[in-house]
Image (cartoon, rainbow, N blue to C red; front, side, top):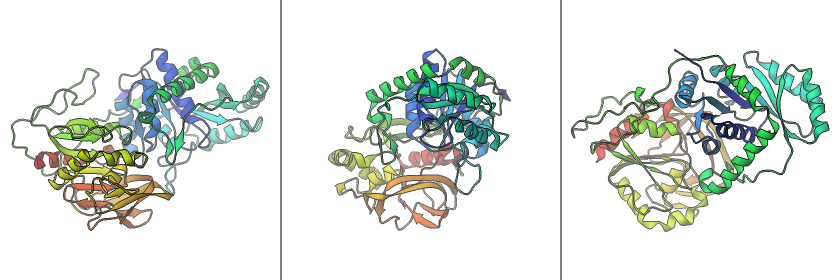
Length: 481
């Protein structure tokens, strides 16, 4: 099957060139022009998609060929972009940077090739003039399968500077699609893991996105960019569907009457269970709010498709878990920034501990691991895990290959997954009597905790790349009620 979706990949020679500013600005500018824009981000990053979502009004989605496999990139893209007029894909790091030691895998160039999408290179031109042509020529010619179709010059100093840059690029054969002037930085504060998430600064983030769009409208040729997007050939293949996930084996029997069809057709054609759920459906509570902002949109879709009723709660504000909670998902985020407030919410901490003691399945990734520990930087947490967590000077970052040590609510023993770590905290001990995962690459070690129904780990896993995970978790929740 072929589907025509106009699309652009926004890349750069290096990190810090202005990809996020330009990509988010383009998303908002085209959305303001009345287009339905589908936002995407190459790699495992959770924070940039939040700004993309703010710019477009649609879920920001990740395209990570390491976590999900190259074969799922086009299907996931088609799923996210269904019904849209335009898709904008922000790259990661430099255009050709990917998983360490694995060639092009997980690079922006790799994803652009898988999508057959034209690439627009954002170049920080602040300290160069004619040399920009050599830089662009090198990136455009490095891999003939990557179509670097245009360049946006960022941090341009003056009319004279822009003229010199354009004159040089006339010889490169790569079209200049915009020149964004050097200006005072938009207030987008960062901390130890990157930009501060949208959920923590909603009003300021709205203003920042509007400023990004204003700069892009002023400096870029939106008509030419849109024409370039329309030049992309059709995408081959079928859209990914949460309903295509395999059930755990053996398939669970709820023994509580007939479950609703988990995959009704929604009005926009996506296979999502967005309608009301019957009493048969187990309630899966997902932690949200300012302290727990990291999640992939597909996780909720997979849980619903597996028959769950998904309810979000905020551990900073809610003193009780959602009614009828039978399973709990606590993803990533910044609990270390809110340790006093999380600790002060003693009723919820006790409710989480009671849920764990009752055997309900709990999936905790990174921030969730910290929240389930005894303490975080000396502040009492839920006390579910025999561990204490604290901030560290050392950044742990990178892709991982891992295997499940024992049967748990997410995976059967021996299941192999690919994940990503990104944190500046440590737990003592680093692993429980039964670890969550055995890391097999890049270095062999064990980490995390698998005890009772709890699976807690630093490893972020994209469930679309680990088929059956959501269905297994929902089955465990149904059995634990």
